[in-house]
Length: 285
Image (tube, rainbow, N blue to C red; front, side, top):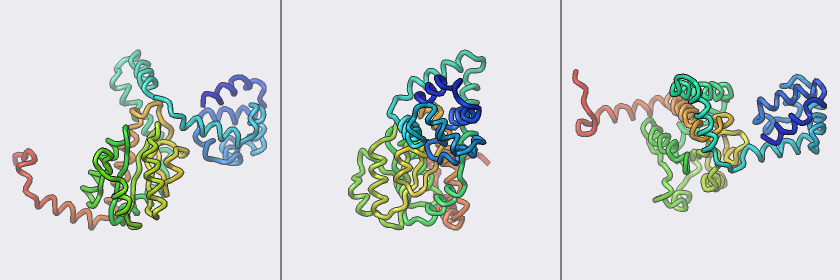
């Protein structure tokens, strides 16, 4: 994105009023440029498709496709976000009530995720999970904790859900045993783990439904998933993306529970009938 910002700053005063509207829109919505046509961008910015294309040439791109290619490349480049994380917290530390400010920033990021939710995609994902013979959840590195939570929770409410553990599981054995009635959920945030993308691609070729949980509609995971659920653009660090990801997963689990109430009630009854005195602290009546 920095390359486009630099070009816009350099050429901005030479742009027409219509082209300036395109520039301002794209600075606020870079991910939309990566996945939408020139006509759609023009409509959103309130100008014609021709104005969008002329804007690209004014910035010395070869055309809209060339600009789109550059944006996509910038969105997925494998750079570390740790410095961005520290810098963003340093900025907040200069304000009163540091910890509250950090949490308020999470709320702002979550509101952005809510604004871009596609309910039809969540409905499809929840339905396929509810109807699945077996569910397998895959996530590497920073996504592994999220994958662990999602697999545990889905197993709690619907059963027959397994977490892929790269340190002990044989992925060849798991893919051989998979069935078209299964659903695999792959989780990968920027920087995108190649192993997760490869597993999702392999499973999809076997005719298994793949749900991708990621942070951008142009992430590599989106290209190999049947349905992609995104947190929206990264807030600068994958650490800061965690609250959005967990909220999105909780919404997905809620959809599964509502859609498959009978199985949920069976699971609840089974848990309630189990003697758990040795596992949990008993509340006094």
